[in-house]
Figure 1 (tube, rainbow, N blue to C red):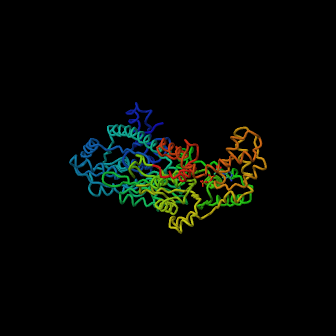
Figure 2: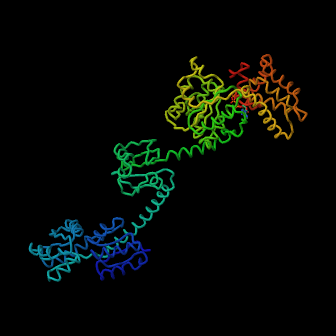
Length: 622
Ligand SMILES: Nc1ncnc2c1ncn2[C@@H]1O[C@H](COP(=O)(O)OP(=O)(O)OP(=O)(O)O)[C@@H](O)[C@H]1O
């Protein structure tokens, strides 16, 4: 496809030009036409793919005016061309007048001082004016008329002395050479623009940039989607998105980061930056992202990173609860799961508070997000603070170089389960309250607010009301946590459920080992009459022991009595401070005091270890 075209003013010139550029016939299109006829030819050439048009004077001017997207090269009148014309003109007399369109007169003006002559000028704005201007020139005493094709044709018809200013071949050669190098530059620009366009189009961020007047110069598909407006290049940014105040950025020359806006109901996070050239701003660019998309992406990344550790295993189906007491708790918990409010679960140790918390999470809208369980009593206050809220590099001595996301951030879009909340110190209670109020966290040592969407479920076996009246627990925090309250009754209050649990747990254990065991009715009676201070957890442990030691298919009350004696012995104060304490201390020592590792080594969960340490007076280890 030919990208360059030459418009000759007449047939004679066309023949000369075709001969001159015979070598470039494949690259250059040739056509005849000047003024309105030239404009028509230009239209046809553009439709055929021409991007650069070489034309003369007024024709060039008109094409440029009508097709601003097309490069037009004006064939100039050279000093040599004008000198030649003047030399001929002087043969008629001293008074030379040029009658022509402004573009040609401007070129003559530039050259007349160089040549050292004074030429009278008569401007044409249309072809129809030519005779009137010639009349005026003659009246003013012109001996000879200079001009282009229009003037010379009219003068010749009236037998007036005239000389045509020819555009020499040298000028056409220069114009063609300029056109060729312009084409190369244009191709390079197009490639660059194409690459920038591809970057803009593939960006996950919305991007809008404006020039110094606030007119849009670039806008990508994501931005169009968010703005929901038919955003056109050249449109005033204030007509499309006035809230953005992008013109203020051009004025101030100062960037603004992390601004939250709502546009068309979509919350976006926006950065605005001035485009600077030399000392001033020549435009501005705004990049913005749909906040929910950022959150979804973050949550996906977080889930990838934490998928191993932060999953809720239990669902309501795992809770054995045919007894009416627990059924009521399950029904209530299901209702709680449907709301987003904070939940406080109270109940004695081992009643199943975490099982309920996990089931609520899995039944809730947050079920696709992480479930992060934190034992507030298992960590010293300062460590708990950095674990919960995270920190930035250098926040405190020993802080990791990269900083660390807190568990609240980890739990984003999911649930955080704050177990043993009654053990939380006052400083952390204050920080927790702020997080609950503002739904955002500040990492230690940072002033950057990180918005989070986390469902909070807290649990305690303490009487929080009593702790509030003793001044050990913040009242405001208590009310924030206690929006929905789930009380899990102790096992001794669900006597009828004991044998059901025992049977179910035995079935579970047998499923693992392949054994076929069942309780005798006497054994079940015995179980029902135990105090079960450790509640369901304790019952489960006893059944586990039964499954391990029972040699007969039917578990007798005799065997059970023996095992229960042993169970009660474990609770015996005299035993606790000796062997068990020693084992725990050894485990803690070899794990550098890291409770999670020690618990794993001792094959018990962290909560159990923590409780045992408390009981044995070794909870201040480290
Ligand atoms: N209704 C139930 N159905 C089945 N298993 C249960 C039930 N309640 C509790 N459990 C079992 O009892 C054990 C203790 O439960 P969980 O850890 O939820 O208690 P907790 O009240 O959170 O204890 P703590 O206060 O000591 O943290 C778990 O192993 C769980 O499987």
